[in-house]
Structure formats: structure tokens, C-alpha cells
Length: 250
Ligand code: NAP
Image (cartoon, rainbow, N blue to C red; front, side, top):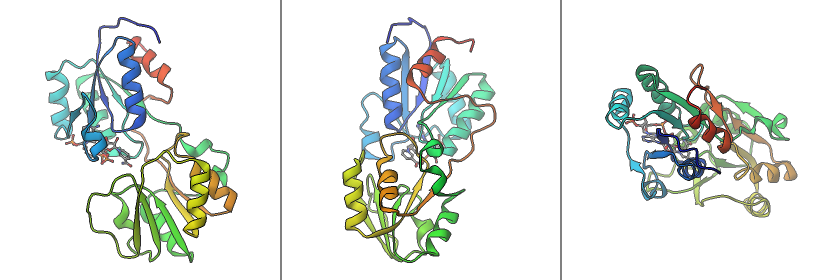
């Protein structure tokens, strides 16, 4: 990585491992970066140097962008953080500030993607899972769990459980990735999982469960990513994102 010496200040909307990696790469390239996290998990709240907490909707973000003389915004939030993505798109359009969506590669291109049942949302995933007997492994995060309330045999793996009420029929497995193939294989076997429900978070780091499910012929229900705001450029490589910041006329 070389020093571009670009005099721009970037607001990076983070809360993901990819966001942390990109922030480090931008800083190394001599770019002034402010990372922002919502602060939902202790890991996010403790991220060194990050500003923590919401902006107060679109209006709040517009105010923040001008008060802090932001030249460009990179939305590196999780692919399912759709409210923040929509707010960033509106605020950047209103202030004419450049905006980039940086995200990990979707699992649409995964070798087993054609074998999975793709659904548009959690309600559809829960309805499909309810039709099959057996035990479901849910890897959709903590917030959507209420959508799976109708299932009566669920193991829900979450990075951090925060004392919320556990839905009846669910058992919480608190565990933070990345997980390797052997560990995922053992989990599916030991827990006698008969269906895996995941969302298309994407990337290589969390994909071992999908290979393990294929090996054991465990069916997969995959929730598709929410659509991006129209016209928003999307990049999945760190080098390309650094280059986007460094070439303001792109
Ligand atoms: P969301 O529904 O899209 O956003 C809800 C609100 O949280 C936003 O309107 C904004 O509040 C605030 N917010 C979200 N991301 C923020 C950021 N980076 N900096 C400052 N405020 C932020 O988001 P979410 O799905 O709850 O995700 C929250 C955070 O967790 C994000 O940073 C995301 O990257 C991370 N995360 C999400 C998931 C997931 O599956 N959704 C998984 C892993 C990590 P205001 O309107 O007040 O500005």
C-alpha cells in the first residue's frame, strides 16, 4: 500500500470486520478516516478511535457531515444494515458528498448457491423451516430471532447475547466466528441439525458452515441481501476502495 497523500476526510460507516480492515488500509494510505459504529455489541463499542452511536436519522447525518467537513462516505456496514445504507444514500445525495458501498462478496457466487432455497426475508425463511421436521441451526444474528418464534427446535448461534428474552423453542449458542470447516461439521453433527438458515452475509470467513452443510447434505435456506439504493456504486476489494477515495473524479 503506498501513500497517496490525498487531502480528503472520509467517514467510514463500520461495525464489521471488513470495515475495520478498510479503515486500516485507508489510514495506511495517508487518508484521514473517521470510523463510525452503531455500538450494538461490546466489540463495536470498544473499537479504538471510533465514534459510537446513531446520528439521529438522515437529518442528523447531514448535520454530522457538514460539521465534520466530510469529503466522502464509505458505507462498510453489514450487508443487512439496510436502514443505515438508505440513510447514507439520502444524506449524501442531499449534500452532494460522494458515497461508496463497500461490502464483502455475496454468496450468490458460492459453488453451492444453486442448491439453496433463496428467500427474500426472515418471515419467508421461518415459513419454509416450519414445513420441515427436525432441528434448525439459525445463523442470522440476534435481532431477527423473534421472526422464528413459531419454530419449536432451534439452535440460534449469535456472536453476543445481551440478555434479551430467548424465544421458546430456541437454544442460544453464543460464539463468535470465524469458524473452520471441521468445527462447523462437528457442530452440525453433534447438534443433529437438519436445516441451516443463514443470511447472505457473504465473504470467505463465515462460509465454512455452507461447505459443511453441503458435505452432510443438510438443506440450506438463504436470505437474500436487501436491494441497494439505486445508483450506489458497490466495491468488494480493499484496494479498489482505497483507489476510489484517492481518485475523486471517479
Ligand atoms: P440498521 O438497522 O441499518 O441501522 C439502524 C440505525 O442504527 C441507523 O439508522 C443508525 O441510527 C444506526 N447505525 C447503524 N449503523 C451505524 C454506524 N455504522 N454508525 C452510526 N450509526 C449507525 O443497522 P443494524 O442492522 O442494526 O446494524 C447496526 C450495526 O451493526 C451496523 O454498524 C452494522 O454494520 C453492524 N452489524 C449488523 C449486522 C446485521 O446483520 N444487521 C451484522 C453484523 C454487524 P441513526 O438513524 O440514529 O443514525
